[in-house]
Amino acid sequence: MLAVVEVTDTEGLAALAAEWRDLLARAADPTPFQSHEWQATWWQHHGGGRLWVLCARDNGVLVGLMPLHVARYRGTPLRQVRFLGAPLSDFQEILAARGQEAVARAALLGHLAQHSHRWDLCDFADQRKGTSLTEGEMPAGLRPLLVHHRICPFIPLGKSWDEFVKRLSKNTRTNVGRRRRQVAKQFRAEYDLASEATVAQAMEELFRLHNSRWRRRGVAGAFAGARMQAFHHDVARKFLQRGWLKLHRLRLDGETRAAFYCFQLGTRVYYYLSGFDLEFGKYSIGNVLMAQAIERAISDGATEFDLLRGDEIYKFQWKAEERETLRLILGRPALRSSFALGAHRLERFLELKGLALQRRLWGRKKVDSAPSTVES
Image (cartoon, rainbow, N blue to C red):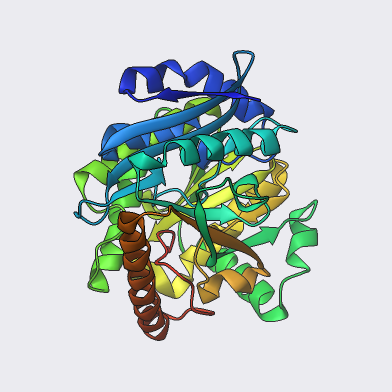
């Protein structure tokens, strides 16, 4: 039986850094969103409520981690538990050592059940299907609701760019090739990856390109606000130090006209957000830089290009396949918890209605179950 130890302050969260990184290296299929760099930085910039990091230890060794916080649900007295990073993290899961996923899950969920008097609702969104939190029995006293959450397209990569391109439709293959040649002919085209010397400037360019496009649609971009930008500046710098940041830029005649904000951990590249100058839309510079990012991922040994949540139509022209994520809601047998579950069901209903409208306005392959934060 594993011992579960709680970390409830920022100092304790910082002190976990080395053990957390070691656990990430021992996990079977971790994502950058489970890293200390991402989650501790999120807490620094966006954290609110009470920090509640659950650490499962085997004779003192960290083998499982569930980084949570408890905050008021929509300003009500109801107490909601969520993962650190929500909703900015595209995947939110227990981090566990390879081979110890089941025992870590049992210990961590058992601790949640044992201390259910501290919360009214647990909302664990963005769980990849088949991961530990969505598998197995629940401890007594927990009322689970497991529902479909999002579609997360991903592109399987071949061993070479030439092999990959052969899988694309003739129309896509022709268009990408023509646009790349056109851009090279019309401009002094340069492709680069952000470095220590350029990362701050490259992030500012990404913010500007992304937000300006969404402002034209009458909505705030995903990088709106100084706090959000400060968070991503810090994450980009820390990911660069770990070798995970893949911030691509397309510069035309010396000016950045498109930027792709990606991460690589292991053999998977994650495409998080992008932006491009709409004045150059006729050159399809978004597709041009996407092709460059995929080609670079293949050359770097990646086997998958994960497009993350959101089923926008453009993603499927690259022969993307679908990955489903689930949302696990936990209640408890108490009146306050019943109110919280009812409020969540109403919120989910309104969310789906909003997405149906979003689909009609902006073009979605199908109705997803929550707004995407990764649209270009």
